[in-house]
Image (cartoon, rainbow, N blue to C red):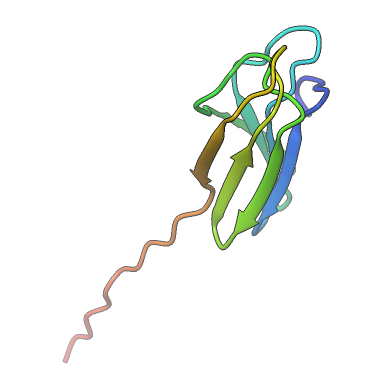
Length: 95
């Protein structure tokens, strides 16, 4: 992981491991995802930055739900993140 985190939520969707929240002693500006196929990390923005820790993550299909947490106070945050998009392209045959 590029930067250590404490109290983060972790969820796996397809070939990616998403790490959201954390920031035990200071806030973290974004979340990161790990691509197991390429062994690389990439950051992505989330709606709540800073010391969002001890949150719960749940995966439903291709969406990650981030629930609750702590930033010095109990948080009533409920956020949804679409972790994977499917793009369908029509195929036209030539005759």
